[in-house]
Amino acid sequence: MNQIDEALKEFEGNDITTRLCGVLFGAIPFAPRQVTYSTVDEAVTALYPQATPAVRQRAQALAGEERIQSALWAFKVLDIGDTGIAIFSGIRTAISMFRERKLDALETDQQQGIDSAVKLLGIAYAVAKLFPAGNRIAAYHACPAGQALTFYWCAIDVALPFADNLMAGTAGFAHQLLQRYGQGAKEKLGVAAGTVAEAEPAVAELLGPVDQIVAQVGPHARRIAETVQGYLPVTGDATDKVAGAVATAADTLPIYRYLGARLAAESVVLRASRGE
Image (tube, rainbow, N blue to C red):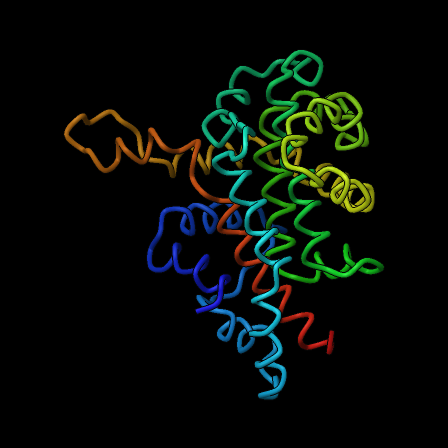
């Protein structure tokens, strides 16, 4: 079993992470739709059904590359922290900030700002690892999982915590976020040697498309919050240990790891289909 299949295996069945993503992406009409697969070979069938045996073999070979391991590590960091990096924000934090609705959240909430910037840099690092330079942003967004990652970051890490900034007409929000908190994010990522240097060229290319999606998602912040909040279990019944455990762990759901594993699978399918 290759390393991508191993990463995907964590989310087999009716996993809460996959269900929450389905609910979130179903809440907004223009949200990306995902295809179903649980291995690289199934991803080939779903995304490139005309694939020859040679393409399938090439996808398997690409799945074993070291760059794939680096990308999967990055997504693990964004979920649980590693090598001294700590990510504090998550779904419940984002919903809580939406409810508080501070007009100056971009200026005053340093921790959320840094964490959002760290996640964008982490995505950019993974993009740089998974796709060859030149057309990597187009290749990234050609993958359903790439579209999903961008949408998720824009919705949960920007639209909810910074809703009033967006409603006030803050244009180019991702640019402003990195201008204000990029240095803090780089210092946090600095413990991972080489991560920032590899991420910076890709994040510069990502900012334009990301800002467009932030502007689209922003007006739907309330619907996103209500959908996600209504889906997460609550701890009102102390006897419901499963629901209580899920609610307690809501900020640490491995959503970046899930979408990242799917992006890795789709990247090797795309590259194999193009003969790379």
